[in-house]
Length: 169
Image (cartoon, rainbow, N blue to C red; front, top):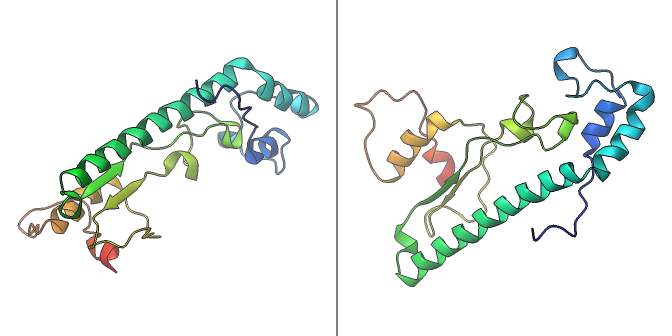
């Protein structure tokens, strides 16, 4: 991949987890049962393991592919003079632990795996680089997007909340 020349390091949170600083409850322990006396050796093994490096390179390659294609979509909207009147939303299911806290995949509710991006682009209506600190979930997407396009959602019982006011403030 385009990231073959990179060597991904073990996250600081993983080093702390393997070194048991602090000691963690069983439900948060690393996927491997590494004894404290072997922790430093294990951390070095993770950095040098070809499978681990390949895993990260592939993830970053997929992210790059998505980024490139979102860019193509935005470019076409500009070329067709539709960008100002089109709401573009980018979201995903959830993140990946990527070695944080010594975990992989989506196994624990830490920020790296529980966070869901919800990026909304609507030029001249929603400020660029707008950041909302309020945590919302995917059930909030429908009432929010429907409100943005002017649909009155009061006759319907959506389980989520309309977050459109946060986008405009």
